[in-house]
Length: 321
Image (cartoon, rainbow, N blue to C red):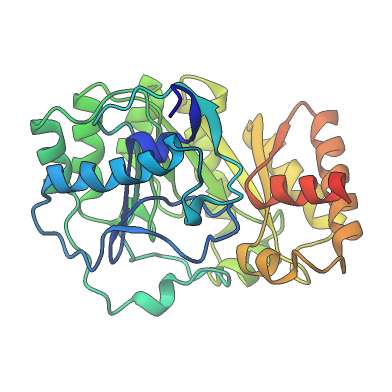
């Protein structure tokens, strides 16, 4: 056993709330991303036994400390060798148990879960804070569905802000403007990511299956105006082959960012398509060319466009081929 070993912040200090379980991880970047490990399976909001929770995480730590890799983590790009402190606290949080949404994205599986009963997340974090398990530093990621339309969202975000937690990321579609998000952006404790996946109204409506293109970019611009730092408001373009994989759409996306005062954006590849085609070189050259075009055009107008998750794996595959 060594003081340094391969691990990640979620294995060590993570709490991942999914709609039907408390999982080890939320990151979809490993070779076994379709095999999530449940810390608490079939979870419906019951009071959590924290001794059991941390014991299960320690069992996974032990595997990595012995120089092996826990199967669901194999191939994950977030693994790094470090002298982890081996302590029981929570710092990296993913809240993804909410289902309700005011859009219906063509790549989202949440629409099939509409009849699922959502458990309450606010009491869980009150309990975590009561036990002094929640440490600042984050990231705390709040997603959904659409967080801003959920009744618990405002008091949960207020709870985090009251406890001086920072690096709180809200994944919002920005269809609804939210004053609590605005408050967090002003303080510099909250950052948001809006995945528009388009630059034109036509493509936005096709992907999101709601005609809110103009409203979304209006709200993005307003959020950017209130943000304490420009990097707190980011947009995202997920490449969906045969839907938005063209230079015209990329260019319009960059123009919309420029007009909205956005300096930072992300680019990725749609999950299902990537894992279905990652062993098949068909379309790879076209996607690589589109990625390079996007980065170049963004740089020309002072926008930093960052590759994320599947795009990172894709670029690694290109480099190693």
